Length: 279
Ligand SMILES: [Fe+2]
Image 1 (tube, rainbow, N blue to C red):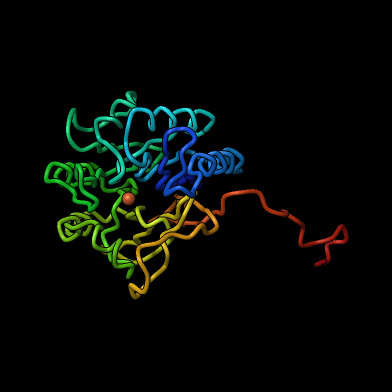
Image 2: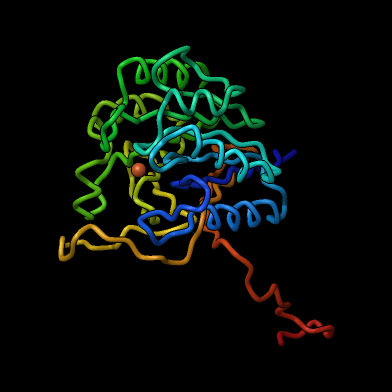
C-alpha cells in the first residue's frame, strides 16, 4: 500500500517589525505575512507542517516577537522556526516556549517527526553576526540524529545557505563552515535535501550529493545582482514559498519541491469542456 504524501511548507525571512513600522522604510512585512498565512491556510490538500527558516524578526525585540505571534495566530498548520541573523536566540526561546529544542541553552536545534519524515532544524545563527556557522555541538547533534535511523527520510533546514549564489554581499555572510556540514550529509544517505533561506529569492544547487535550495520570501527579494553592479538592494518581486512534498512507498521514495506563489490568482479553469474535448 502506498504511503500517504507528506506536505512540508517552508516560508522564510519574515522580518517582522513592531506594529506600524515598515522594513527599510518601504516594505510592509506584516501585511506580507498575513497574505502568506492566508495562502498557507487555503492550500489544498491541507499542509502537514510549516518550517520558518529564519529572520522571523528584523531588529529582534520582545515587541517584534509579540507582533509575530499575533500574525501567526491565524495559521491553521503546526509550525516551527529556526533563528536567522536577524533573530535573537533567547528572545526566540521565550517567544516559542512550547518548542522542543534539543539543547537547554545555545543553538535552537529541533528534530520534528511528521509521519515517516524527520525534519532537522539547524540553528546557523551566530550571535550579533550576519554570517552563519554551525557550532560543534550542533554538528555533533546532527550526526547523531541522522545516525539514529537508516530508513526515515530527513529534511535539513537552516537559515544560511551553504553555497554561494553569485550575489556578493550575501555570499560574504552565508554559512562559513559549510565544509564541516558536507561530510556529515555524505555519511547519511537518508538526508534528502538541505533547505535554506536568507537570500529572499529561490535558488537551487547540489550540496553533499543532495539538492540544496533557498526559499523565496513573502515580502521583498534581494536584487539579483551577479556582478556587484549596484549597492546592496532589494526589489519587491512576486512573493512565494516552497512546498517540499514527500512521496513515500516502495523503494527510495521521492521528494519534490514546488515553488508556490503567494496571493490569489485567476482560476483554476478547466482544460476540458462538458463534452470531454480540450477547450
Ligand atoms: Fe538572513
